Length: 93
Image (cartoon, rainbow, N blue to C red; front, top):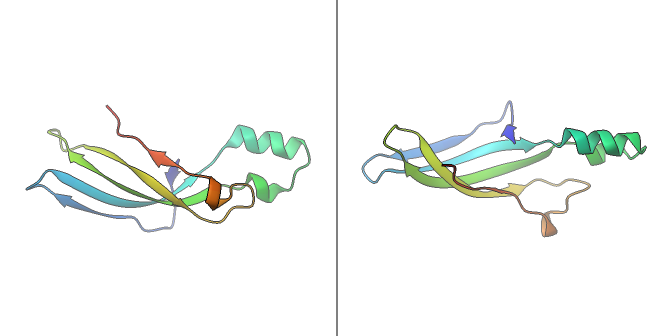
C-alpha cells in the first residue's frame, strides 16, 4: 500500500487531545499476483492496482509520530468486488 500519486490526502492534528485523523488516497498493488495472472493470459485489467481512500485515526505519540488505524473505501475493481472485499490498517508498535 502506497500513497496514490497525484491525489490529495488530508488530516487534522489535535495536540490538545493528542489525537490525529487522516484521510489518505492510497493504492494497493500485488506484483507477484499480477505477474501470475498475466502469465496465465488473464486480462491485464484484473491485475490493476486497487485504489482506495483510507480513513484513519489514532494517538499522537510523544515523539510526534502517529499510531493510526482505520479502514479503506475501495474503488471499483474488476477482480475485487466492493461488496465482499475489505482492507484496513492496524496501528503499529
